[in-house]
Amino acid sequence: MAAGWLRHLSSDQIPVYSAGSTPGAEVNPVAVEAMAEVGIDISGAEPQHWTEEMIGEVDVVVTMGCGDICPVYANKRYLDWELDDPAGCDLAMVRGVRDEIGRRVDALLADMTGG
Image 1 (cartoon, rainbow, N blue to C red):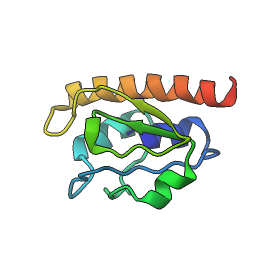
Image 2: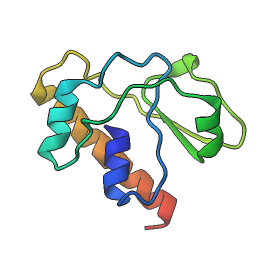
Image 3: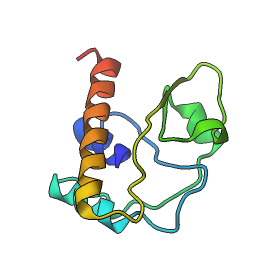
Image 4: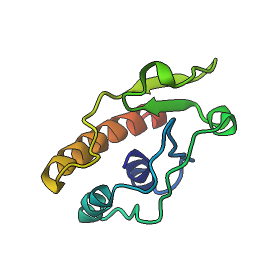
């Protein structure tokens, strides 16, 4: 959802990767539905494992409850957003997570662009 928000809010002007340390088999269909409600299509997203190449290309790494599992690379800004995991949750709960992620991505984008 965060990658979808960033692509949307930046009008695809900021490169973004979405990956995880233990990605699922598919994107949560309830998350796809929740994002569609706000006009953001993430239906084509595919879960993938992060790579060193991805980390090397970015300035900011946002994790969501990754803790000690995620590696730390020098000269990167790290943000760990403690959020409820929407996996297996109903649409109402996922909407709350969606909205919180949207607020955080909006604030991050403003910080990154000086806006």
